[in-house]
Length: 99
Image (cartoon, rainbow, N blue to C red; front, side, top):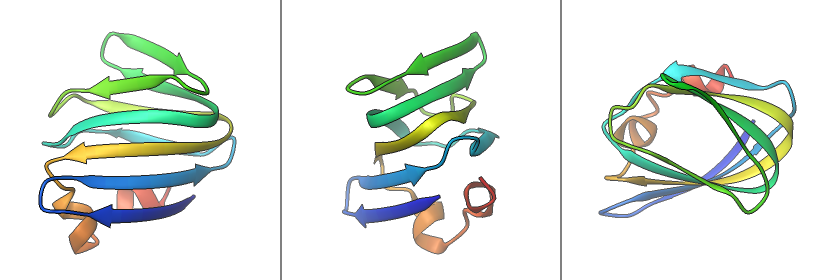
């Protein structure tokens, strides 16, 4: 997984490049999240089931909503978080680095 990020006072914007077969384990965070798939395909694992998202589609996750991700195809995704991801700023994101 390759990740580029910018943090502001009110949000974190991240561009992620993920290879097919990559996975982000189920987790939650205090941040609202909006994910837009630019290319490829993801499966979001949610408490109520799974939802696939493809190019041009958007997934919104509420604060503290448990979720995981399976990368079905090589993908490029924009993730927006509000408030900023303090854990990422601190480097406390080992769960994601294993993905």
